[in-house]
Length: 299
Ligand code: NAD
Image (tube, rainbow, N blue to C red; front, side, top):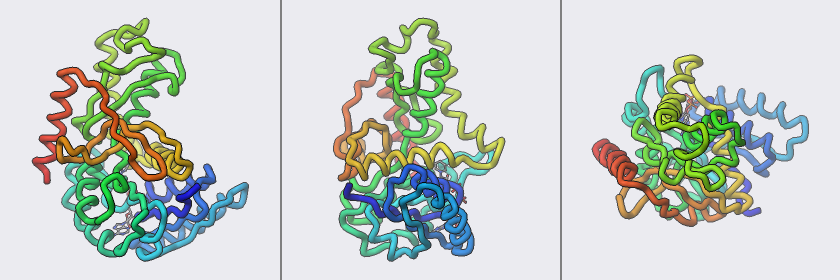
């Protein structure tokens, strides 16, 4: 176990719920929360420290950018969230200056740190973060379509009556409206998803729409999303701390496309250890290129 001091910059709904998920899983020796709103941050720490009274082994404390810069894993969840009906790409203008401030404040950064980007628009903020630090690209990556993929597996599992873990399917591309399911490689027990008993072509379209719209639906009902993404970030930290070589789709720099977006990767103690060459059919390949084009237009 190498990486166990975890800093979270941005202690709003996503950052503080991530701290809670890390505490419950006993993944970190120390959690440092950093936020420009120090009063709110202090409140979150006091509240979270109550959760430690049960069987927690982590320590949690308030920190500043310098403390965060020396952590083993730095999670960045600072920035404006989507409002009802707002697209993720619309957040770029507000969140770019926040990243400039954060990355200049955490210099010099621990050269071995792994930086996980959560702030939206996810792929563009990951791309931007990579340009603001000298860390190797495999150490700076985003949550990408990991959450969308878990949503996809959850809906397929419910529809087919098998456990989520038995569904092998990915959402790829942009963490946003241009994401797409890689149906051509999706399967359950080696059975291609389109041939699984009871699954019709129309079901696949409905499932893809339900995944894409889930965040909008949650935001329209309760204002923001945080439990799902916090659980994903905690799972990513666990894979890094315990060098688990977990395969998940994360937003990473794809040299072939000179852009960050999600493809399946192997995540271990060194960050992204390998990008896996998932086979795509011609329609999926077109959608991937569409994602890249749209993201590049926003740069
Ligand atoms: P929030 O408003 O509850 O919290 C954001 C926090 O960032 C606030 O506490 C604010 O004070 C802090 N902050 C702003 N500037 C800062 C700076 N320079 N340094 C430190 N802290 C700073 O928002 P939230 O709901 O927690 O969402 C945070 C981000 O996560 C948003 O961009 C949201 O879109 C994104 N998000 C991503 C996913 C995903 O799947 N990747 C899912 C949900 C939310």
